[in-house]
Amino acid sequence: MKPPVLRCRHVSKRYGKFTALRDLSLEVYEGEIFALLGPNGAGKSTLIHCITGLAKQSKGSIEVLGFDTVTDFRTTRRLVGLVPQEINYDPFFTPLESLMIQMGLMGVKPNRERAESLLKTFSLDEKRDAYTRTLSGGMKRRLLVAKALVHGPRLLFLDEPTAGVDVELRQELWQEVEDLRAAGTTIVLTTHYIEEAEKLADRIGILHKGELLLVESRDSLLERHSGRSLEEIYLELIRKAEGRHAA
Amino acid sequence: MSAIALKTLFLKEIRRFSKVWLQTVLSPLVTTSLYFLVFGVALGSRLREISGVPYIQFVVPGLVMMTMVRDAFLNTSSSLFQSKINGTITDVLVAPIGAFEMLVAYVGAAMLRAFLVGTLVYLVALTFTYFPLHHVGWILFFAIFVTATLALLGMVAALWAEKFDHLAIFPNFVLLPLAFLGGVFYSIDLLPEPWHTVSLFNPLLYMVNGLRYGFLGVADVTPEASAAVVLLSFAVVLAVASALLRSGYNLRS
Ligand SMILES: Nc1ncnc2c1ncn2[C@@H]1O[C@H](COP(=O)(O)OP(=O)(O)O)[C@@H](O)[C@H]1O
Ligand SMILES: [Mg+2]
Image (cartoon, rainbow over all chains, first blue to last red; front, side, top):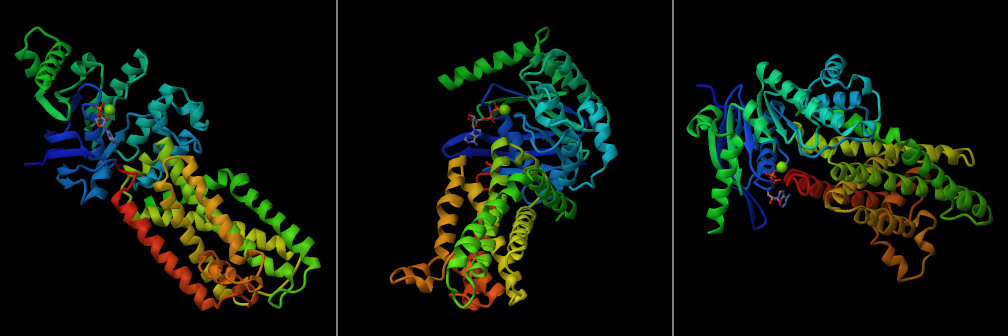
C-alpha cells in the first residue's frame, strides 16, 4: 500500500515548559483537502511548522510520502509547500524576481515561463516588476501562494490564507485550491471561516490546546450530527473541551 | 546537496548588496578613502618613515583590512538579521537547504563584497602612492581567511541578536576599536609597556599586520604568527556558526 502523504506519529512540541502539541498522531491521504480547525493558540501553526521545517518537534516523528522530515529533510521539503500565516516579503525583489529566486532555493532550475504563468494565475502579472512593498495586502497574500507553488509541491499547507482577505478574493483563492486538488495536490489548510471549510474539506481535524479532539470525514461528521452545520458541531466540541479543561 | 539552491542563495545575497551599492560599496569606499587622505596623504607627508616605509604606504594595508573586516561582518549580519526580522528567512528555512549551503552562500557573498571594497580602496591609494606588492600569496591568504572569519562572525551575531541594537554592538564597539588599536595607523613598537604587550592579545592586530606583511614586507608580528591566529579564529567561529545553524538556534523554533 502507498504510504499516506503525511504521517505524524506521537508528535509533541514543547516551548520551554509550555506544551504546544501533545502526543499528536495524524495521517493525511493523497489528493484530499484536510481542514485543520481550532481556536487561536491551539497549535495549528506549530504543527505545520514542525512538518515544513520552521520548527522541530520535541518528540515523535513526521513523514511525508514515507520520508522522515528530520533525517530526510531535503527530500520532504521538495515535496512540501507552505503558505505561511504571516505575510512576509523581501523589499529587495519584485514579484517576478521573488518567484525565480524561490524556484532556485527549492532546488528547481529557475524558469521564467513558469514564474510568469504563476503570476498570471494569481492575477499578479501587471505587478511583476513592481516593488513588492507597493502591492496590496491581498496581492502580497497571493504572491505568497504563488511562491509556495514554484516547485510543484505534492503537499501544500495553507495557514490561514484568507485572514484579512475580502470575500471576492477568498472565493478566488478557494477556487484555486480546488483546481490544485483537481491537479493532484494534497492540501492541508487552516481557517477561521468554518463554513468555508465545510464546503471545501474532505476531512476535518479539530485541534484544541495541542490535542486533536477529532479527525473525521466531513460527510460522516455531518451525517452523525444530522441537520447541524460544521460550525455548530465545532463550537460544541470546543465548549465541551473547555469545560473538561476547566474542571 | 542542491547545487541550484546553493547558487541561488549565493546570487541572491550578491544581488541584495548590489541593489544597495551606495550603502554597501560606495559608502565604505568613501569613508576609508577619507581616512587615507587625512592620515596617509595629508598628515603622512609630515611624518617620518614607520617600520622603514613611508607612512602613506604604511596605512594602506591597514585601511584595506579595516574595511574588509567591517564589510564582511556587516554583509552577513545585516542580511541574515533582516530576513529573520521581516520573516523572509522562511523562504530559506522551508527549502531543501542545509547548514553547509547556508554558510557557503552567505559567507561567499560577504567575502566578495569585502574583496570588492578592499580592492577599490587599494586602487584609490595607488593613485597617490605606488608600491610593488611584497608577497601576493600572503595577501590572498589573509584576505580570504579574515573575511571568511568575519562573515561567519556576522552570521553568529545575526543569529544571536534579537534587536538592531544588539547587532550594532559589534561593528561599533568591538570591530572598530579593535581595528584602530590593532595598528591600522601605527606600529605597536611605538607603544610603551604595558600597551605593547596588551596589544598582542588583540586578534585584529594579527589580521592587520598579516596583510601589511603581504603588501609591504613589514609587520609587528611574523606572518606565521598572524596566520596561526587567523586560522585559529577561523576554526573557532566556523565551529560555532555551523553548530548554531545545524541546531537551528533562533531560526527554527
Ligand atoms: N516560538 C514560540 N515560542 C513559544 N511559544 C510559542 C511559539 N510559537 C507558538 N507558541 C505558543 O504555542 C501555542 C500554539 O500556537 P500556534 O501554533 O501559533 O497556534 P494556532 O496557529 O493554532 O493559533 C500558543 O500558545 C503560542 O503562544
Ligand atoms: Mg496559527
